Length: 78
Image (tube, rainbow, N blue to C red; front, side, top):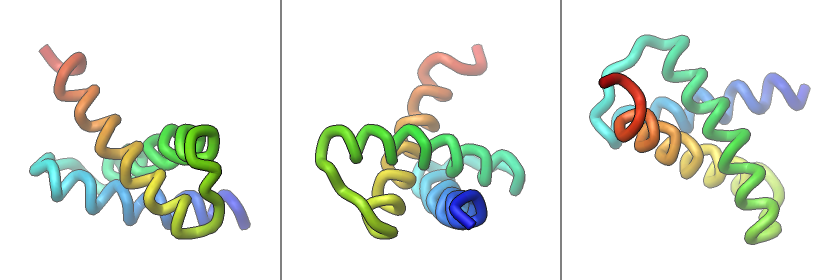
């Protein structure tokens, strides 16, 4: 059940992050950005702010997705 929740939260965060940063991606890439962002953001928020629960996970996923997109634009395709 945790994996399904991670995918759903990651997909939502990836969708919001890619649209907010004006990045056009396909659905699997959007979900991957959100899930990886959820892992990054969730770990960072849990360590730094000790936030838990669904809202903390969503905020962490969103922040992680923003960070991942920014890193991709800075150091990715050249």
